[in-house]
Image (cartoon, rainbow, N blue to C red):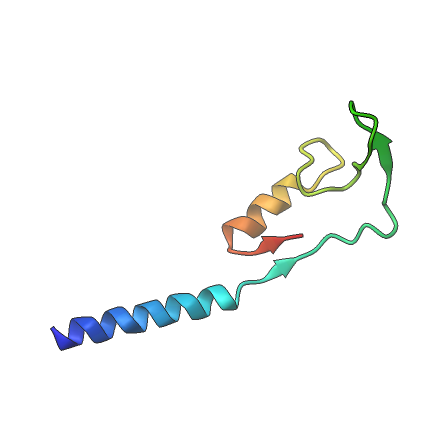
Length: 73
């Protein structure tokens, strides 16, 4: 029983350490900071974004990064 408890504690600590070491991937919008008005009339950034699924977006790369545990900003 003591070995099982020790193993569970080790796995929990390893899991917390692995999450703390996750990577953060950021898109720099300095050069491609294009805006347009949305339906509500507010300006929104729309070019070269993680969530864009058209030819100007990075949704495929975003899925790969997320699959490997990275966070996106």
